[in-house]
Image 1 (tube, rainbow, N blue to C red):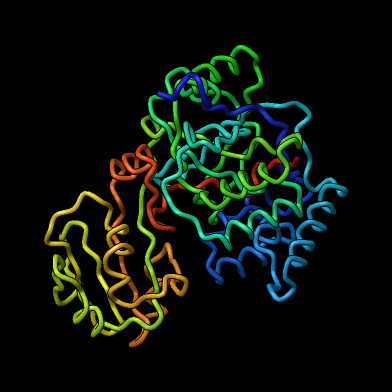
Image 2 (image 1 turned 30 degrees about the vertical axis):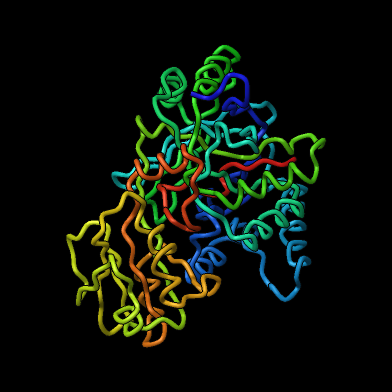
Length: 387
């Protein structure tokens, strides 16, 4: 439970912005996955789906323009606002967001999260890459908006989760379909002062893990540091999920490493590790490495409590001579394997366990960047906020 003398977990109502159904081809057609899971083929498909797709805001093009490339999404967003393509909710609310994709369900509250620089109640579990923090911050500053909610998880939501389920029993405020109709998104509003007070009181008893959006949260904190007195800078757009009632999935993120070959893995893997031929299945906490033609599997023989991704970065990458800045990260193994070659190895990881992630976060230990992929992730474009 958070220290009553310090920060408390707060998710406040906001007047969210949303697309107007009659102004776009379809509400689902203007939405996007988060920026950091967008492979080039997905970006092309989304860009072609509708002139107002959110990918045109969250992925500024033309890197050669430097900071000027963020002016384009800022002008585009302002144009959508003037034309009534997006409108702001006239009254503040907390929003219940539900995403159903097959058997996977994402369900929780969207609102304005009070920032916690002291890390007392909002707990990160991954390291960040400074260039991506700067990228998200420049986009936030140019658009004067939080376009993508970060995702947080907490446990035993009690009365707050009861309020979420009660709202879902009514008619949705917004509905949208994505992925050729296979994913359904619904949103409800909560604005009753008594219900909001109940939610606030319940959340104040909890702490929350940042499941997805570490770079965006770091950008929120940097914005607050730069503009501490500005209205709206002390909060950021977030979705809060009771992972006990609505569990999140936890998947690995794979690595593509230029300059690494299997001969190096075989010859320079240190004591305490075993290198097995092939892609061995059923080995706990394994690390499989391929050059596209053959595989080796690396496993610790010393026993470990730390997540495998931490061991990879702490013990193996340094002795393999890997420059971490050269690594690229891929949520889909197929996308990583397409890049494999004799001098460009793909590292396939297994996901950390939830208890490992929670224990690390509670102890103030951060895992390497891109250590986990929590899901399902909230769709971008259904709700966003401006300062």
